[in-house]
Length: 232
Image 1 (tube, helix red, strand yellow):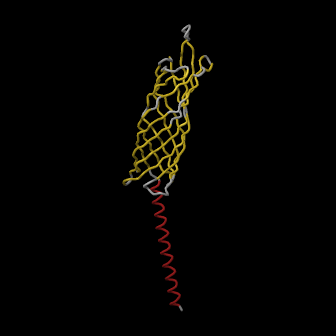
Image 2 (tube, helix red, strand yellow):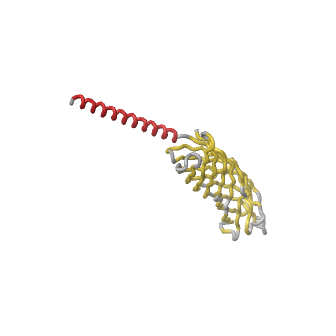
């Protein structure tokens, strides 16, 4: 009887030890996965910036009928650096090489080069990564905020041309395609709802008198990016 009880105790103790060891291994694996998920990444790419611009132009406080302006589409290099706060959630900051673009008149200003602006947009987004397909294909969606910095503005038809940047919103979608170790290719689409406001001086065509003018420009670019990235 005592021998049987001892054997039972030994078996029970062994099972408890095995269970504890398995639980410890599970916790260790979970901790390792969490540690691996909390890592950095950087994406370097080439972006096409396609503007969906429109403008409202006032002279002496009155809207100029059929007056519009648009900004030329551009290509630029971008860098995105991000950090995983969870295995499926990251926070990212996207920067681009500053662009210099013309503001060209449309409508009643057709054919006129209104001014030139050097600018850059910084975007901060939160991204949700879909991990169901493995490291070879990881789509994501995201949203965040953007700010357009104005580095320089140059006169053309409009004199004393000054532009100020504005905050805006960003919607984002894309995918990463793992191909070797911690490296991946990526494609990314961002729709940025942002704009700029400006002041300038134009002149009365009859008398040549200076007239104060203001403009509100909606830029709203679609940014298409492809490149290579690395997690570290």
